[in-house]
Amino acid sequence: MRKENQSSAPVSDKNGIMLPLMEEFYTIQGEGFNTGKPAYFIRIGGCDVGCHWCDVKESWDAGLHALTHADLIVENASKFPAKAVVVTGGEPSMYQLDYLTSQFKKNNIVTYVETSGAYPLSGQWDWICLSPKKTMEPLPEIFQRADEIKVIIYNKHDFIWAEQNASKVSPSCKLYLQPEWSRSSEMMPQIIDYVMQNPKWNISLQTHKFMNIP
Image 1 (tube, one colour):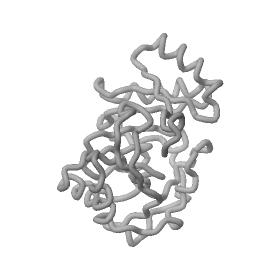
Image 2 (cartoon, one colour; image 1 turned 90 degrees about the horizontal axis):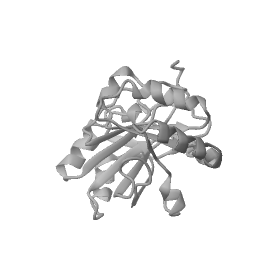
Image 3 (cartoon, helix red, strand yellow; image 1 turned 135 degrees about the vertical axis):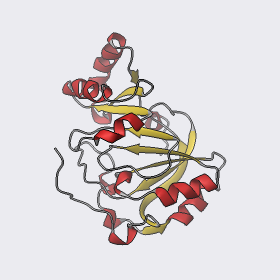
């Protein structure tokens, strides 16, 4: 069930030229299909999906994060050896991202996005990671666009939720189950057993936390 917004994009950001940038940093991707690859991470503030286990709740209120010109974000990303960016949040699909991604493309930077699919997705993406959330289900049109689906496993029912979402993606979409960090010791044995019985799934770990990097 979709709910009334708790947070919204700043009005001045409607064209995507200015974005509420929470943080940006160069690191190694830690989750899913692209684990182990270097990339520049861009975390945009603003989210009303409301996952109770979210580990970046400080990203929810867009008003806490300074509006930053998209050209500056692209300039910063271009300084690093790996010409790849991961746009995440918060919920990046709350924003118009056509301009940002077009500038990345002009600079030959590969674009990745991680989204809950709760809003229509704008922008030019080389890789779309869909991480569906029960609190705000993905829009139907996002499923066939997803290159990867990553479902966070917090309890046993999340396996059912994972299968419901996996039934909607394309046959080429990569499927991942990832334990919620605070319950990983409890859920990991169940995930291992599930994947061994259902080999279409892969296991995703938050390897950046083991490596003690952002």
